[in-house]
Length: 214
Image 1 (spheres, rainbow, N blue to C red):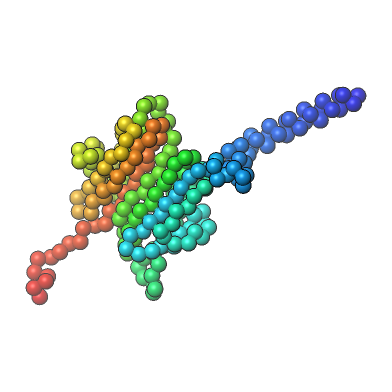
Image 2: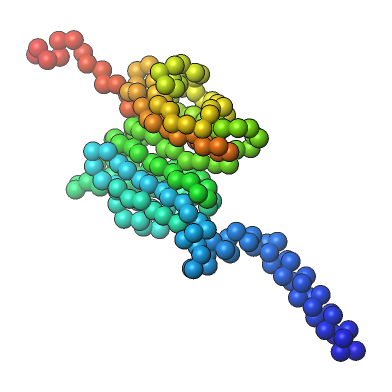
């Protein structure tokens, strides 16, 4: 009888443990153990703003102001919010972005915040490639329609575009759109990863002839 009870207890424990790990992924548990989380998470989110500082929130948590390098976050999707720091009430708005962090990678937000919805710059982050192939892939989107993509000064395609196959290496990317300022950025393609690039462009100011002669 004792052996039967022991066997039933062991079976119940195994079933409960299996259910626990089914609903609570092992990755999320390991990533929160203090002694090993630093090595297991190994992610970096760098946030930079040009021509001024901005407040930072990640999933609603205050992370100070730019420039900032946030390390060892568990992999997953995050809501990043930034708001330009100004002395008085202004036309600057809080901006929100969805960023995905993957183990052993870094993500970077490098933007200039303009009035209202205007932004200039780029967002970069890696995700595991879903395609089995040597090298990596580049996905590019833009806040302007039909923007042109140049890689090492050669025209490739127009945005939006997904899974441009590239060898593991560093490249110079330029994204242009008529009537908007260009975005130029160095990128690093890694084996087995898709690099996601999102560009934002300021409209080019319109200068009327004779306006300076009045």
